[in-house]
Length: 322
Image 1: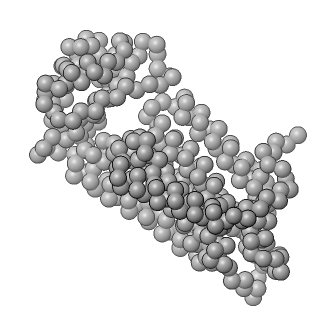
Image 2: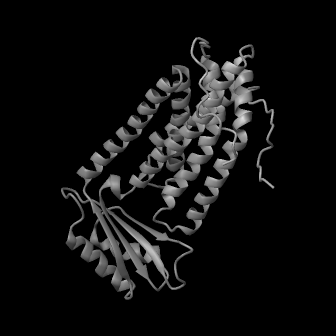
Image 3: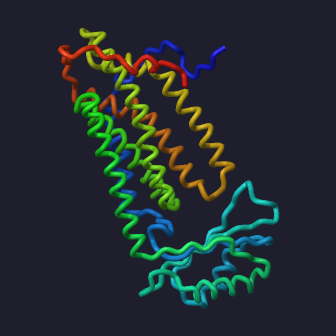
């Protein structure tokens, strides 16, 4: 008995209110951009420069006491956060103390790190410091620039690939979906003020690949059906194509989400931000493949050139549940 989250033969009308979905997606993108510009991103140590000291103690973390002990050192704005993880032992209490780079210094000096460790030992004698991470502001600025260029380059290469693989209307639709996924994910991180570091950039690039895979599967079926049903309106062909690949899309998304949620719960705090970004990417990527990429294609229209040979290679597996 085969498991199906979606019936094999569906006939949902995805384009009955396609202008509404385009408007909703545009609104979410604008709100995400405003959130990123107004609220700003909670850049991690990779992008801000400074030092993060990870503490490990058999006694519960008291953030107020830690802060009160460090304040006399005059280090400016100090961020202290307790780390909770189901994989920790019952007698393991972890915190992260983040110290920004001091004026005129590339990174927090060894003397400052030693001073922080000494005052924390005064309030928690059994405390240990399993990890210390430092990065200078110059390097962090270069990392921000490189990260932005990496995402833009990925979107540009996708645009060229889809343009050559299909037509320019398909390329615009695919890039619109990818830009939608990346921008909304960034907006969620800005609203929730989740730490944004290099791992999140890796997640964004992975989201681009995942969303593109979903979109190309749908576009392959669209191109096949455009040649197969020459008299049907474009909206009917798009509806048919999405319905034919719907089971495959949902099975792929659900199985991916099961793995990601397991990692989010059990994987530890080190990869939690990356996994959270991936979860958002899978959800918004599935949505955009159906409601953004194809709706943009419907809006732009497609020139049906029947002089080209009917090439269905690569489409024979589009309706397989995987």
